[in-house]
Image (cartoon, rainbow, N blue to C red; front, side, top):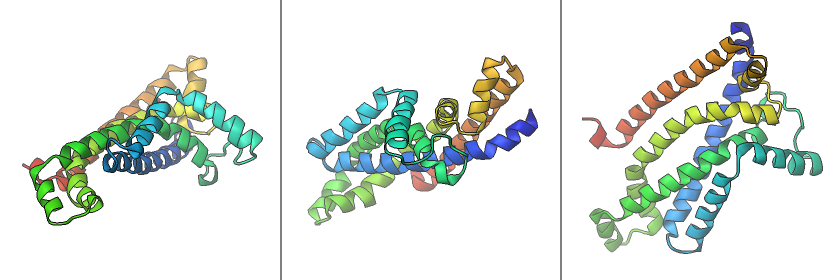
Length: 219
């Protein structure tokens, strides 16, 4: 079993890393856009996209992407080989749920940070909304956003079996699904331990990052 995990773990780490990068980037863009245009059409559009992505199950998105993008449009491969060349579509499918949740958390945190008194002083001095967002609001909103990212990293590992099965990704998630069908409990337990270890390490890293970003947390 350990040899099987060792062979398949790099593919899952590759998929999870790509999904995490996509989720963080898209959540930052959507959350910042919604906060900058709060109450206007950019906010409504960003929240609408996040809500639409959140309510659709990941396996449905994966099947639709395979049908429309890969089969009909001829972009990508039906059978992924676990390399960076075929990682984009599975990673995007895996990241969609996290994008919706993280962007809404970031929007709320940015709007709460924007109500601080020093933001009014900055505006009175002529700072543009974009500068106030990047220089003042985003550092204050980073801690809750990073916390959600840390908690969601383990969720990405947990959601990998579905996406890997849909895209035939040769990782430990697909291997675990096959083990469940075969009632191979040691493999299921091993996958659970990997997910728990990822959760612990991600939580520790997020705590360190939050302390580095927010001086109030260092004490």
